[in-house]
Image 1 (tube, rainbow, N blue to C red):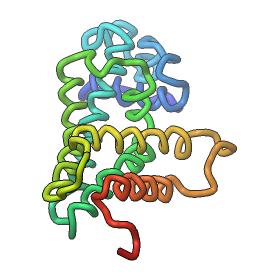
Image 2: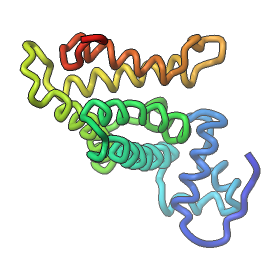
Image 3: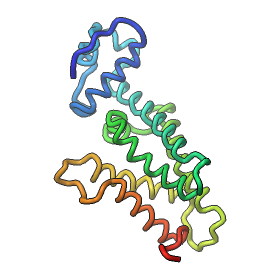
Length: 206
């Protein structure tokens, strides 16, 4: 990562931005506040006006990530879609898009060891993102009189787990571990199998 100079503006955000770059390059536990300050060309004491530890920087990166994630999910699941199913599928695919476009945030959120309850702001942002998927599931199953349908919150958790697993195993892992199918294909098929199993979506040809 090339060293950048810092002259004016928002040092707090500049520290987060540098941390995101270093998280991708070296991992969430392999940088220091001193290193971040050096990259920005500020004194080693300057960052402590905003963060008391490296963990707080990663926590803020995770919070911002969840906010971006929630925005992306909300846009994907927008009510302008032609059907509740298409809205639900779009929200699920947004998971893959976020992980690809925002690797630093993704790592801070899911791979840094930072608890989602590390701060009220982080917990709120995470709940907001999760609630979008849950609401999409609630809209999808509304009006379906199918026995033993799990509550929307559980359906949302199931789909979140499927999406996360596909990202971890087939969208971010070493090339040698990649599936012969794309992450998008795996997710779309997995969602279809899951929803047909619930009886929410009818099997093809019916």
